[in-house]
Image: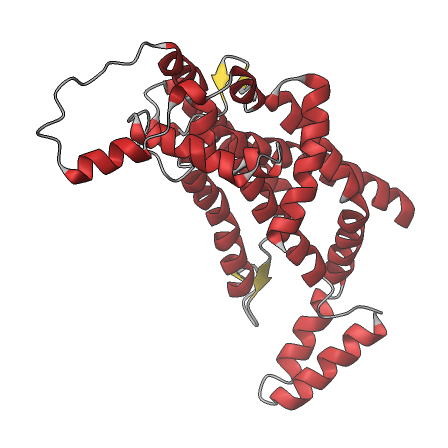
Amino acid sequence: MIAFFANIFGYILNIIYNFVQNYGLAIILFSILIKLLMLPISIKQQKTLKKSTKIQKKMKEIQFKYKNDPEKLNQATLELYKSENMSPFSGCLSAIVQIILLFAVFYLVRSPLTYMKKVDVSVIDKYTKIIQQNDLSTNSAYPEIEIIRELDNIKNLKNQPTEENTDNSEETSEEQQEETDKIDLSEIKDDEVDSLRINMEFLGLNLAQVPTRSSDWKAYIIPVLYVLVAVISLKITGPKTDNIKKDGEEGEKEIDPMAQMNKNMTLMFPIMYLAVALIAPLGLALYWLMNSLLMIIEKLVLNKVLKDEEE
C-alpha cells in the first residue's frame, strides 16, 4: 500500500519537477498541493478536536462517578459520545492517513529514481554495481541518492582511457571472474546518464546530502530549522495540559497525568524526527520543514474560520 501511494506521489512530484526543474522547489510546491488535498480531512479533524475538548469536563465527571465500575463507565462513555454525535474512533482516520503519507513520502524521497523518474530496476542495479565496483561510495542505505550524486564521476570514468593489464598470469580465478562481471563503462551512453539526473541544488544546499555523512556544516541547516519550526507547531497545534484543582485545596493545582503524558510524547516527536532527518537525504527534512510551516498556517486559519462559524 505504501509503495502504491509513493508511486502516485512520484507522478505528481515529477510533473512539478518537469515544470520548475528544481528538486527543492518541486518539494515545496508538492507539500503545498498535498496540504490542500488533505484540507477536508484537516477541517474534520479540527472540528472533532474542538468538540472533544468541549466534552472533556463531562468525561471527567463520568470517570469520577464510575471509577470503580468499568462496565458502567464504558456504557456512560458510549452514551456521551452518542449524545454529542461523536465517534470514539473519529480521530483514527486522520492518524492513519498521516502515517501512510509519512511513509509514502519517505519512500519517494529515499528512492526518487524508482518512484519519481520511474527508472527500470535493472538500470538502477547496473549503476549501483558501477558505484560499488569503482569504490565511488560506500553508502548502501540510499543507493538511488548515491547514483544521482555520482553521475558526474561515472561520466568521467567512462571517458577515461582504460589501462590494459599485460600480465595476467598471477590472477586468481576469483579475480578473473570479477573482471568478467565488471560492467564496461564504455557501453554507458551519455543520454542514459543524463536521463537519471535530478537537479538537487537548492539555495546553496545539495538535497542529496545526508547530514551525518557530509563534511559540509550547511547540511545541518534544514534539520535544525525543521526542529525549531516543529516545536513552534506543537505549541500551537499540540494538546494543552490542563491544571486541575484538588478537592478541598482551593488554589492548589495538580497536572492531569494523561495530559502531561500526551504533552511529553508530543515533545518527543521533533527529537525522533531530527534523528531520522540527520541520517536521511535533505529532501526529506525539507518536506518535513514545509509540512510543519503549513501546519502552523493551517491551524491558525482554521481556528479563525471555525471560531467565526461558532459565533
